[in-house]
Image (cartoon, rainbow, N blue to C red):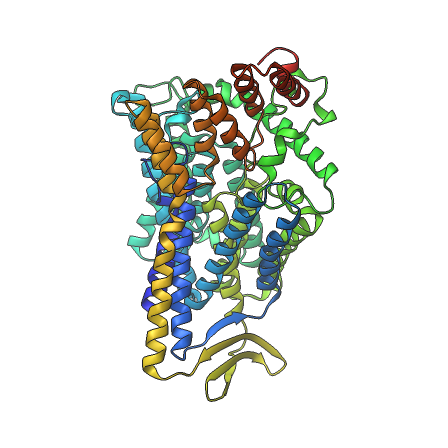
Length: 599
């Protein structure tokens, strides 16, 4: 079964490339979460099948893994007081799958060679994403009639998806991929590795320039400075000086690359220059005020729920109710008050808002322990370990910096990258120091327990396996795999519902549209975007009573202002003016733009 667990782990690594172009609104997040759930379940089933067959499934005994488990468990605790229980359960389940994926990786990844393979995998994913981005950029600029995307944003970045759907998410992955590429470029001895790294260090920054993501670029810069300091302190300037020519060539290529995108010439897809185009776009000008408003409202949420938070996954549900005094008197910021948003755009603020002080402290503690493991006694590390730890410190730094302006822990790729870093740190730490003592194994008639030791007083992992007759073990193992495969349709329910949602919006007749809407809601009753659209569609069809029924269900997972205006319209159509007026008053109470007549 090891081959199956390995295949599932490789499939998880390919998560950034998963996309469903047949979806209506969620072509990027829902398919990736479903992919993670399916292959994690299948991989865990394979590991458990091996344990049933007598090969222990190991659990590490260290603070990093313990804090990760506690962080996951706290998500489930917050379900108890979350206003939207179903959204809290969804968020806690996603964190559970990520934690199980971490445990699955620990059963497979052993030693530094695996860490190098993981780094090459990250570079390969970054390269695919970079090529994808640049192709979309060129198609938008020079071949617009062949565009395959419907933009949701005003400028050219609305035409860039690269399987991630948002240029900030694209930029985050590109920046992370550049970090191991830089280290490999400095260390490469084979020409093939040197050329691969050199090409990647041209393609990755080219795509990073095209997506014009300030947070991603800032994370890369800060991470590069951290790695530079660590290398100079522990390896000395010689690490750069002995390969000065290749670094000079790379810097020269970067200068030409920047010049290509910033000057006005016929080959530039962003004429007169990407700096002019980027800084002059409405999206850039709105980016700062939007985040200021979101952070102010998030602080208000924290102020109202400082100890326990609003519950895992409930940030988007509670956010429209916030009305922070920090933005009163600022019309440029108040226009965002009461509107729905997808995240706090800051990992620590969102953790505190959703999980309270305990959840935020656990996240900070986990990151702090990861840094401690990487940096403790770094000056004593030998060269391979030094560079691996330096690379991981750079990756973690870039991710944390990105998380100050983006929601990297709420997206499947960002969260998977974080748990991948934690996996690499745990594996790297386990490979340090003197050779381990031989494992201890205790057996009974039906059970075997294995304990790995670094010293007699310091166990590093414990594992359990069953000792069953071969036929019984095989039968149970096959049953576990079948159960994991049977789980796949439920994991794919949000994806299938999105497809029905899309088919309903392009249906030629109202009867056909309603069939698709109802089928989608039958597949996934929690598809709040679909149900919200369906409630509006019912109003357009002159069926206000049915629309009110759907709005009532929608409110269990969606708390946005447009539901009040939709409710007022439905009551007005039914001739219940008192209810309609009450809904409009509630809208004005909650939504500043409605109070001043701007919406």
